[in-house]
Structure formats: C-alpha cells, structure tokens
Amino acid sequence: ENFPVASIMMPKRLRKPVAAIYHFARMADDIADEGDMPDQERLERLDEFRDELARIADDTTPLTPLFISLGAEIRHHSLPLQPFHDLLDAFSQDVVKKRYASFDELLDYCRRSANPVGNLLLHLYREVTPQNIVYSDAICTSLQLINFWQDVAKDHAIGRIYLPLDEMARHGVSEVH
Image (cartoon, rainbow, N blue to C red; front, side, top):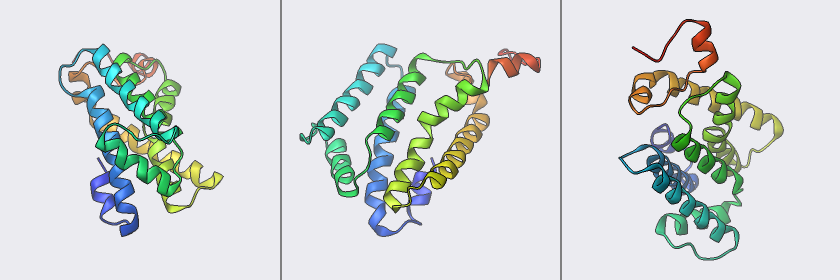
C-alpha cells in the first residue's frame, strides 16, 4: 500500500523496477486474498508465478507480460530471486493458515511477507549491507505489524487473525466480538 506514494519520491531510474515489483506483489497478494476462488485454485495460480520465476532463473522468456517486465528489471538490476519466492511463500501461507499461535510465528510470516520488499529496495539502491538489512527488516516488519493491527476487523471478516493466539488468551481476548 505504500508503494504508489513512495514511488513518486524515488529517483526516476528506480520507478520502473519498483512498479514491476509492486505489480508482482499486488497481483500475487490479490490471488491469495481477493474474490471467492477455492483455496486449491489460489495455490495453483501462485504456483504459476513460481513457474514464471523459474523461467526467469533459467533465462527463458516468461509467458506473461507481468513476468516479462519483471524479468527485465531483475536482470537489469541484478535482483535476487529469493525475495520473490519468499513473498509467494507468504501469500501461499495466507491461503491455508488463518491463525498464529505466537508472536514468533507472526514474525516468521513478516520475514517472508514484508521484509523481502525492503531487501529488494536495498538492492535497487545498491545499499545492501548487513546493518542495512537489519534496519530494513525492522522497518518492514514494523509496517507489516501496524497493517495487521489497523486491519483487525477487515482480516477477521475474511477469517484471518494476525494477533498471536497465546497473547490473546493471556489477555482474555477471544475471537468473538
């Protein structure tokens, strides 16, 4: 959600790759979350994204315009593929996992759902250092947690709870309104 606003403040040379990353993430997230598609179909469509990433890795032409554009940016900026796979793993998890037992489980999800975006941006800016990765992960995880907490009602409406169940129990909070 922060991509469109932030992208106008970026150097022009990064707007196209950021747009490609955003479209990838937005489309994959929508597959996991939007509409009334059965879970199996959602997972199959996310697997098609993985197949497209494999084509990029094999230096084979992707089948869809989204991945043709993304592949060009990945090659041009020497972006690692793992962050894209991590995002797909998180979106696939959204399809099948609706509750988190502990804060550590939630942090593991953030590691794959939010932190990859910061990692890709560090690569685009050529600022990948161990310390910058630590800072980026902390910021991205924080933004993801804030998003969860502002969307508690919205997520609950689609059957998801991103509050640690052990902490809910400790504080006497139930899933019932």
